[in-house]
Length: 422
Image (cartoon, rainbow, N blue to C red):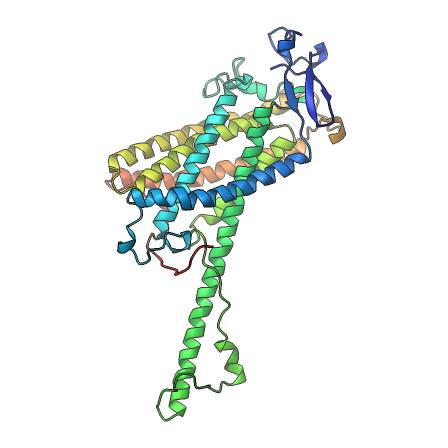
């Protein structure tokens, strides 16, 4: 796509006019026709994008809760993931009174749907982009046929303005990863608060039982009648203060074993999509989002099938095998040997004007930002290597006759919290 001279109305919408020779991106094709059919509407970036992202983010959080209660948990009951009420400790089907396995099923179903839609939307946009050429080829790097060079060609003029579809896709991605970060942080804090409450309640009951025994001993071995006030020394009064009631966690009741790595991954991802959108790195951001969605869909799909008791293990192991292949190819071969080198070397070589001229002029290139993004990508690859080691451990279990179980999983016992969801 060739860059265009743009004129803005009061709404911030850019009306495209034919390009001047100085604006034409390096291309073997002649300039586009100046007929009416060549006109297209592009959009700039501005402060209102923050409002849109926040609206999407809260919508994701709300829709997830509604889908969990009205779609995923009923499916868990129908497909046998969740035992019938008469076979469970609690007949309640609220998220706060369900087995961990049902909550995991709900979580993975949500991820599978969203990453599937994201991959579909991202690929529909990608196939029309110049950087799609030889996109999935490992041998095209640094060759004239390497489409990834278009990630940086024309950066000074043509990367600021986006079509409505691309802009909407990117804002949705920012909101989606933001909602994952918020949800993970919120659940972590809820679990920790719940654990503190349980510990304080245990200490309270222990101290109260001790004082009851002391009171019984002072009463000649007779238990104190219920309702009888017991004189408690001031030094022990605090021990008898019951802990303040804390709501049980909405989702998981235990911290994931890789909670720190997962939080770091979400934080880095949110930082990258925000920086890439603000600094016109949306092309490489688009590529990375598509690459990562491939394995995320396969992983969530494999986990959803694994939680269904009637699903043959051969099917789940096959899907898991496809996931391992897609993870290795997209996150360790294409991402590590094509995308990261493109940011490290091609960006510096192909961006003509490397001077930071300020936001007011619309030329936002910054060497510091480029290196910051590169550092974030290296951190992501480090996390991918860590998780791939865990994946290989699961592969080893499968090859020795075991099941493809998540080695990060916590216990999946049922915990009846006796609480109703609000």
